[in-house]
Length: 391
Image (cartoon, rainbow, N blue to C red):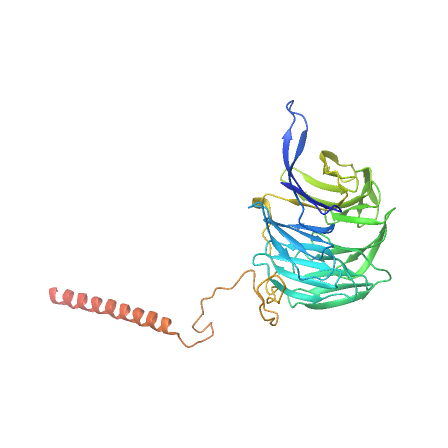
């Protein structure tokens, strides 16, 4: 696996992580070795996202840079936005969704790197977005004091909710049964079935990052050294631990067959990996740490492609390409739907199916089948006549 982190100093760091067990056969201790540093942006990095092949970074220089982790090369850059890139989210391996201070949300084909859809999402900045696990819905918050729900199947706005203050984080739970909206140090927990607030969690300081560790347990980090685990049902703090010497800027969590891991990045320059206990009331144990010497802003973990989930937007969720400044320009068309589980292309004929006029290829096939059937009947008839004569 590879730790990737961006910083104010315009650099992207990469560290290769290797799990190792102590020689005495004791507890497992991981090591992180410097792999690369890349200085592609001309301003501080503001967002990072990963899928099974690519790492993408967003910056205040208004560009999105793409890195091919398999070939270990920079793949290119996307320059569709006119403002700081505030959020980047992959959904599976086929789609990237970006938001920026220009108020746009863009959906990208993560294979051809074409802009499939560009939506004017907010009157102000887009501050954060989150895609539902099904891929059919997305939530976004912005500086226009609204929480917006997006129908990704049809590429349109589904619902707008006015909120009292500007929210800066929104996040779906793993199963998509609830979502949270963060405003300063308050975390409102919403239920999907009612679309209403079921409770509010209050953190001591402004919240900088959140991660769902399960459907009900939420990790919260903010402008302080501590990380807290909250129960979203009882709204209580399960545990807290001192993670860094300075404020925690970003977190990332993932699971391996052996461990559930949370990664933290801080302004103190350290990236730390923690092994979560099965009982979330117990503080996690430190697996490894690495000092970048930089003021970190964003974090991601690139995992082995063999272990990465294979996802894409749901049936009918892929819109047609739009024009972009960096890719081959194509005329924008209406939203076109591409099924993930495509139906067979064979056209059904008969009483149960739709009757269609045969094509030239079909006629040739039908003639060949008819000739074969006639030949078979002829052979049977001659064999019967021969049998009668012998009798």
